[in-house]
Every structure is written in C-alpha cells, then in structure tokens.
Length: 281
Length: 281
Image (tube, rainbow over all chains, first blue to last red; front, side, top):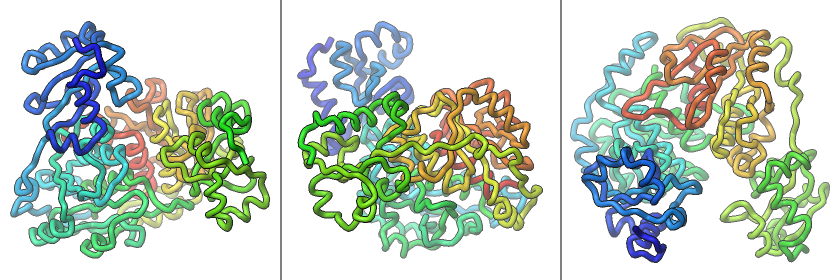
C-alpha cells in the first residue's frame, strides 16, 4: 500500500493531472471516478489506483479488470490529496492516449448524404445518412468543461469525428476527460497544427464547412448542403478566426432574443450538431 | 482605501460569495468582473468595489455609475484574495436580489400560441408566438455552471420565465451569476417550495408540461401542444423526480447515437427550448 504523497508513482500522477507537457511526453493521461474507470477500454489501461476503502467496498466491481492490469492501493487520506476532484470516489486509472490516423478520420471518399428532402421525409433522410456523420471542428475552444461536453454531445449526435486546432484546451486535461463522461474513448478525434490546410483538403473531398457566426444568416432557415458537413465552432470570447470564417462555405447565426450577445460554446455546438443531423430542410 | 482582508465590508463580501444563508439574510449577492458590472441595473447596485489599479485604468468606464453609487477602493493584493475567480478583473458589485411576483410570472391567462402549422409557416408561427414564450422548469439542477448557462440560453430562446424548485443550486451563487453572462438581470425567475402544486396551478391556466425523459418518445417527431409550454429538465445524475414526470403531459427523449446514456443538462435544456420555439410541427 502507498502511504506517502511523496511516492514516485503518485508524484507522477500529479504531474499527469497538472501538466499537458507531462501527459504528452509519457503518452498517458488520468481518468478518475467509477464511471470513467468502467468506461476505460482494457487495452488502454496502464495502471489502476484505488483507495484502501474503495478496495474494501468494491472488490467485485473491479475484480475482472484487476486480473488483467497492475493496480496499487493508496491510503485513503493520501488518495484524497492526489485527486483532482473535491469528492474523490477512490479510483483512478492512468490511461494510454487513444490515437487516430488522419486517413481513417478523413476517408478519401467521405460518402454522400441523401439529396435534400422536405417535410416528413426528413427522418428517413436522417437515418439514411447515419453511416456518414458530420464533423465537429473546433477553433481555439478554451474551457475544458465546454470541450468535454462537446465531445459527449458529438457522440450522441452521431458525429463522425471531432477535429481541434492546437489552440484548443488539451483534450487530456482531467476536466475535459470528466466532462466527456466516457465519450473520449468512442469519438475519433484529430488535433491539427494547420486547421486551414486540413479544411482545404477536406473541401476537396466534398466536405462543406458551416461557420457558427453572429453575422451569418438564420440557422433555422438554412438548407443543408449535399454531402458531409464540418460544423465550425469558435473561441468562447472571440468566436472563429477570420481566416476560418473566410474558408467556410456557409455562415449561420442562431437567432437570439433579448440582449444576449452569444450562446455558450457547448450549447451552440449542440444546436448545430443536432439540427444538422435531424432537422435540415 | 481598504488595505486589510480583515476589513468588515470585505469579510461580508466573502460571506456573500461563500454562503447562501448570508445572501438570503441580507438580500444581496456579488457580481464580479467588468461585464457583470456593466450589466447590473443601477437600481439593484448596493455598493461597488474596485481594485486600486482598476480605478486608475478605468475611470471613464464606471464614472457615470460611480456618481450614483457608493464605492470603495481596495488594495490590489487584497482584492485578489477577495475574488472568487482565478483572474480577477478588479471590479465587483454587491447587488440587491431582483424579485418577481408569482402573479407577474404566471398570469391568469397565459395567452395562446397559434394553431399548429406545418412547413414554411413555422417561422411565421414562431414569430406570432413571440409575445408569449415558454417556461423553463428546473427540478434539482445541481451544477451552478449548468444553471447559469440555462438562464443565459433561456433569454436567447425567448423563454418567459425560469421556474426552479428549492432542490436547485442557489441562483445567487457566484458561479451561477457568472455563467448567466448578465441574463440573471433580464430573465424573470421564481423559486418554489412546491413544484408539483405550481405545476397543477399552471396546468389549470392552460400550460402543458413537457418532460425531458429517457423513456419518452422521439423529440424530433413531437407535435407541439397548443398554448404555452413548460419544459421540465431534471437533475444531472438522476433526471426528473417521478412525481414530476407523472404530472407532465408529454415525455420526450432526445435521440442519442453511440453509447451515450444522457446529455449534459444545459445542452438538453437548450435543445428543448430552441426546438419548441422554432421547430415544432
């Protein structure tokens, strides 16, 4: 049992929780809590850490996983000091970062959605399109909670992949991981140094880009372009970069009542993803 | 200038930031940052506190407000210790709680929406309905960020009022206030001890309640009932209380792909509010 916060392994967990550079160097991140522990695919688990009392109470819960993976028991008070959360659940896992090939995420022929249809046929069209899915493309999203929520929503909305530029918060930040509620393991993602270059490449393969933008035309009157779509969502304070807006095909604005000047970025992304999937004309 | 954290006024601000009971007793809450300062209506301002360097740099910004209100200058280091945020902007305001009459929020005749219409007429119908607006009704929403985001989204979606039961996070919690981005001053709200009783009363006045519920029917195939709607959103972990679901008129589920078991509560609320406003059949 580990009984000191000065233990080498625990010091490394602190580094993985606190520093993006440590995560990058080791190719590891930390997932905390029962839910995230259960969601973590076996092949990505590096090592399991449980508090003393968690081990006592939950032997059956992690018995099967423990058989396959190394694990350490940590004294309760020490575990609490280690945790990134206010109410630690007594289990955390160090996890190998999932990686996706750009070629797998952006196939050469991204397929085509059905032709635009109206009225009652929308459901059918949406279903026929299921195999394809859209892309969520994030430009300098800063808030870890927003980023995690977007990944969770993207899975629910049947998004094919999430693409982020390097100005986004680190996807392996513990707050992002927590907010994904496990979707981090199921939604393919790509982090790009050159968002504009990637957009141009994807446009060549039939992807249309829709910019969520305050000066755009009314979102609820939009017609969906044929083929797959990249939904562009920008920074919480400043929106999308000018060049990104210029490279987009369509600019759409969610109509807003009152004196609200913008919506929360995760809320905007959710409205775009669900409405593009189910409600385009 | 205030130079000690032991100053009586500053100790009171700490209490207002930290304790719901102190806020309730004094009828005051704290709004932090330039944006919230500018959004605060003059008639609600109790007292303004600025850091020394903020006063130097922003005389013009708050000159007009300062003329009307008492203000105190706080030594920079002390202001930083006082703040609820990691990067304090140097201005905070103590604010009198806005209060709304139940009778103003829930009029005896809540009016009627246009009859259900289809196709291109939906926009027209939505516009005609503008004067009415729906209700967002919250059952044990726990996360302050979610609650604040919901109030912000409610204003944008033209919601008439937000109704909360006493199981919700305190609306005057500094994290809620921040997340509203100023909507706290513009969206009427009501906190009720007896949500079921209020629902029954509102139903008697023609309001239909829609429960966001995992076992409901498909959200995107729903028909909007006539008259105003109350959109029910439940606790982040456990959803709506059983009695609340039973008292609702319609249960709707947002369809989800993948292995997602639920959406973030603020995301669900946003989809319901915008869908009910713009896209009902």
